[in-house]
Amino acid sequence: GEHKKLRKQVFRNARDYINNFKRREHNKKEMSRRQKVHIKQPVVLPSEFKGMMALAIRVKGDDIPETCRRMLSKWKLNKMYEGAFLSLSESNLQALHLLKDYVKWGYPTPDQIKVLIRTR
Image (cartoon, rainbow, N blue to C red; front, side):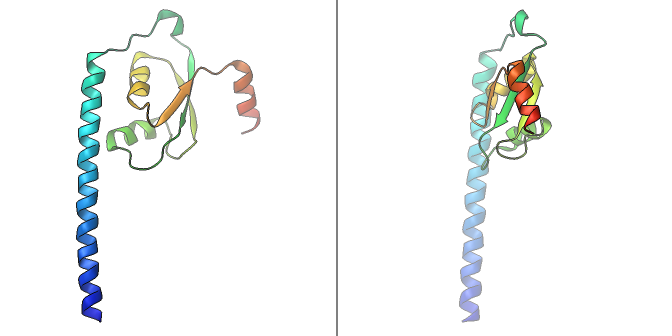
């Protein structure tokens, strides 16, 4: 009985390790592919958008590549449905395009900002 349980647990651990490894490798390949595509199409911020604010909200939670997770934590978007105001710059815009599957973003109006702050 005990030996059989131990053997099952060993196989389960090995299977989980292999699955996690495959998922990490897939995430690495996906991020490198996205960055290559993104480098080919540089983001240029029009002059009328400089200094504007953007509201970014995290909408996806699990299985995020490590590089994306670092970018999200830099903006303090660590949990689902957390939001952050970002100043629009070319680097932030480039990162937002890279994170398009995990973050939804837009330009909030002053009325929307007031409501968000009031209902916080």
